Image (cartoon, rainbow, N blue to C red):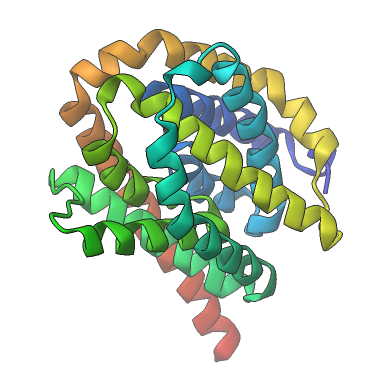
Length: 254
């Protein structure tokens, strides 16, 4: 499917969503897919259309951001955590390619609903034990593999183990590794990467990327307020998405 296959209204909606994902990715340092994919599924309900496009953008912008920042990465913790994250991400990628679309979309909206409630109610994802850290890394890796929305779970662990000064750059390297694995798997299994569509949307996402860079410090200073507003939006979008999915399922079943 190409952009021209969408209506004008849909193309405007796609443009706004990709500005939003670019803004969140650099404004927070994570969450572009988690906060953008549920909106994209309202436009077209197949994650395999959007995930390769998001992946291309993430590779480009994280690579661009890291160009002169690799010295600011916590490499020892990145290597340690990858032992738990990468195998789980590989399992998630194969789930993405084999599970029915209804299951995938239900999974994505349910995970997003959980994130929305935690942010809206200011209930952080915390762990106080090494085994809990490992469980969150494994679960986050699996969710990242299946939908690229596992960032908040992994970030909860990274925030306790990586200094704030190095956090964003270390996370960008992690996203780059995970997306490289996903894209390599797509190529090996001949999944359509929608590369031309991704390139077409790149300048649009760049607008959000630049706005996010400018707003990053302000977002960090007002982190609680920002996340509460976002959390409320995610809860609304996810509930509507789940209602829409199961209403259609009920109609088809009857």
